[in-house]
Image (cartoon, rainbow, N blue to C red; front, side, top):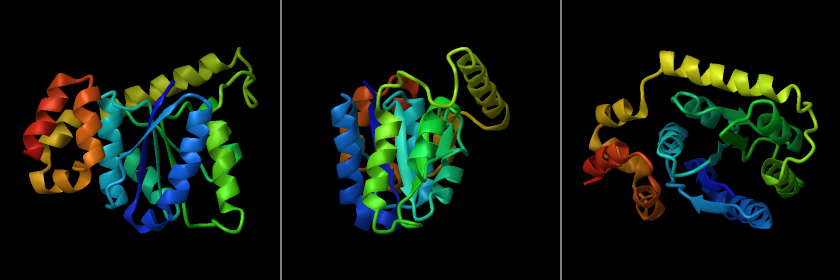
Length: 207
């Protein structure tokens, strides 16, 4: 069972109901839990929010997006502890799960969202969340290479980027409140946060 955080960017809030409905449908089918942390703000702030949730152990997977999905992906990958893949179709969903072992996905919620946009969401979420019994793109023998590459990326990020605790300390209270503060965040973050020092830093900034 995974805890999944949904974070939709401000320009796509008009499509929130559809996105959340399809995500919850797939999550419920496979026993996952969805928390909607969307705070009607920019993809830059959403990248920070998603990184905080992942680094704190509040969620196992972040599903985010914007009009094209690209801005959301770039923002997410700016942080340690986040490996965000781009998912525009069910094939992408399968690959970021099996090959990249991503803990975050960014999706385009407007670009190419045509008549079959809802159906595409259904298939993407299905591939992303269903039990992975028979990998489509890799054999069990080569999965170890994917695990090693994921670790290499994590190690590289640690050398190139600063810990999330430093990010929280450097940003001013007004910015953090706009990025983080919501009913959903207050309900789940402090209850589920596995990093007590990080929880203390965030609490101090939000008071």
